[in-house]
Image: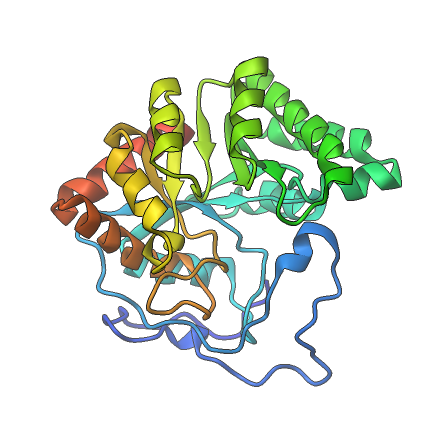
Length: 322
């Protein structure tokens, strides 16, 4: 993304919105409707402006799932600026995640530009039926495997199953793509980041039938306490996002209480899933302390040890940033 403003010359203050995130008028001719199709069409271009910088965390944490290539709002922000803002909030590193060939190529390139980034590459489950219809799914999976060989690409993701946005006629293609990513992850020794929406049973069944990689992450965990128990049994990681703070997400709070603390991660899925009280505004890695503090409250945990454990868990999945 192009740079629209220079980084702030002083540290950000709690409650202050970094200057380069302030809302501005969109370029002439800009519209709210993205031209892209497939997974990239999730870009929402909201206009509410970015939330203020929260109180920085006392111990650094890692955003293990974010999309720096998905613009939101009317402000263009460089990777360096976004990471600087996150670092000011105590979110010192991140995993940039691909969802199609374009974003996976972007990911493979950008992780070499900043030591605060590692990457994951994949075809989003909603992308798979589109590629299958075009006759290019196999070819696309071959390129994903080539991109995944990069030293700083540490995961295949996000892949999985999505029965919410894709109808039954696309489920076979999703499953084929999911199983292919699973196989690639095992052969290359990479972690697997799973997108699971309204498909818990089939995701679990596929992992058990095919044999899961050593490190599996259910990104933006959306299950309940029972699914958390199944993850505990299998040693699968559960990554909680801003949805944990939503009023109607009692199931996620119950799941967090059940989850093995050694298997809990945190993420933004930015620019989506902005935590309460900023829901509906664009999300960013620097906003993640809001979710971490909510986790501490739910768990009745001190913030320092929780942050330290989240970082250890994340490094156990992705390795060291170096």
